Image: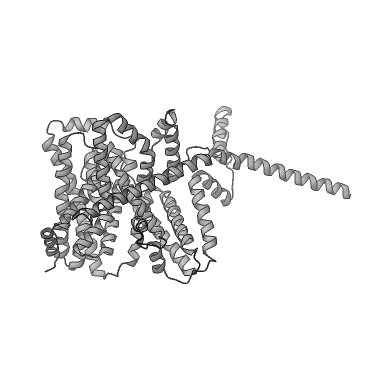
Length: 566
């Protein structure tokens, strides 16, 4: 009896081992095989990090040059770096078009990664709204009225201005231009719903996979797609394959009724994670778990605490934004991923700081300390930066990378350049002069009226304009952030209301870039590459005009007077 029981135990153990091995071979091994090799991912990560490092040092060099120039110390170095890089590319194209285009082609995977990541870099500015002073209910209602009315009026005025200038300068060629735009239109140019700003179409993926001479850049692009969109283009999950085989069997052998397999919720969650996850998500999740396990029991006075807090909040921001982008499109139309990710990050900061005995304001103060890369290099700051500081530093590289996008989608004639400038300049004066006047006329305080002069520029330029005009920087940052987010949410609706054709790249690009600065540009990068180039050019020109106007004493005094100051 004892011998029989041992054999049965051995047989049971053997069956369990065989079953486990089959499960590992069929599910886990096939999943790992579908993932890109770790070597390719390490190379891609290294090259992207190297690109950002080079971009940061380039931004520092531009800052050092601006500091030596009279009356240019307050001009943002990232915008100046983008303008200088664009003109260098134009000069190089004049001398040697072939080598310039080849250089832009080689650098494109890394510049595109920086541009596709731009949305996540606006989260620190949004989180900083918590530190703003409280506003009364009536004042908040008036500010909301100015925001909505001002955005709609400026948006529709900009579309009308662009189309009027096109009719004046292209009275005969207008229809030809529309037809050529329609022929060259990007295959994924629908503005009906908000998708992830980093989406790349299947047609592009097929072109990438079919090219033999673009192996290195193609692997980087495909991996960037998986990183930022969450779409798994490389594998077919086992459940999907089983369903596909089952459908073929039913087709061959008749209309047999399929018996649906019942799985527990844990199995469904596991299948979803296998389909949605990618190497980068898994790496960020492992980093988050490691930092959280060390952060929670670690004393706050420990010298290693700033390091683990930095990467804990950084990975939290990346993961929450990645999950927010996977929400259904209808939800993303109402709640922008930046808003949802910022809310989740603030909740996470509140929890971790509560465990340490602090409140959310203390955590947000450590999340964004104001430490810059230039300050670290010049030893102005000697402390650890926060996760928000790290993302804000990468924003400079993303703005500089817009030069490549502008170069690829630059206007091809002098008339088109005239349309760009003659459409943006009136909108800049409308925002900087008329909006503060309207805010003051409906009862807003002079301080709250003055902040509207910097609403349609990016955060870096808005802070500079606020400093020059002595307005409230925290409120200006909040208005700038909401203005950028409003573009992807209300932009498609307003474009349809203005009857702008989906192939009118110039009108869409100039309008979105002038009204929603960097967020609107990042929205168009995956939707309409040509329009995103125009948007990059538009918000750069708009911001430059804003800084110039604010720097002229007569004009800045006029803005203050219109806002209600004596």
